[in-house]
Amino acid sequence: MTSTEVQIDRSKNKGMLVYFAVLGAAGIAVLILTVTKQWGFWGWFGGALLLFTCVASIASMRMTGGAGLATCPQCGRASSVLHVTQHRYLCCAGCKTWLEGSTQMQVVPDDHVASFPAFDLVLPESYTWPDGCPVCSGPVTRTVELEGTDVMADVAGMVAPVMIQKVVKIQAPCCSQHDDGVAVRREGGHAIVSFRSLGFWRRFMTSNDLQPRASET
Image (cartoon, helix red, strand yellow):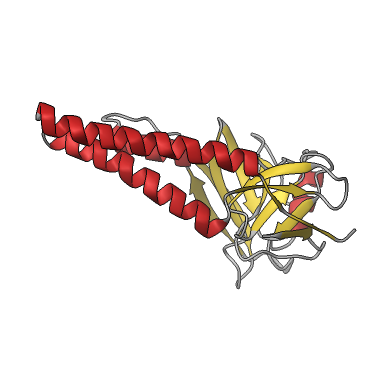
């Protein structure tokens, strides 16, 4: 089997719709109480935000297909996905094969180079870089400094008055033509390094005796 069709997860979508409906009802209740209790600006803001979140979330589900189940063509393991109609890269939690697609999932070719750093690994404290540019495998002529933070912590920092954010920095090799082959971020207390090239991902993993990191489901 070379590809599999992503199935709509009707049970999960139903649960999400119920949750969004509760948000909408809460927003309407807050707006009514704001009028009767004269809560002022924050009442209007909170109610409107809840109501907007409800409407926007339901609209997004309709546009992108909501939640689904992607079955690996290699081992048959099913993984939960969101936004069924949008293209994604997925590392199977069963056989650790990289898959790609939207409504259809297929195995990523060995020589594939993504348009952005899509192939993840947990970055150890000490590591070595394989030879060659992370994109084209050509001669390395320079390095580029990359840094990343935790996206969820960034969002929390927007509302928290004081927030200490951990930053991870690396020096990544590159050739004279490519400086976008690697990216780094923090996630769940770990540093995560990502690569555009699936081949370089495999070589980095082998050079540092690392294990594949299954995509979050």
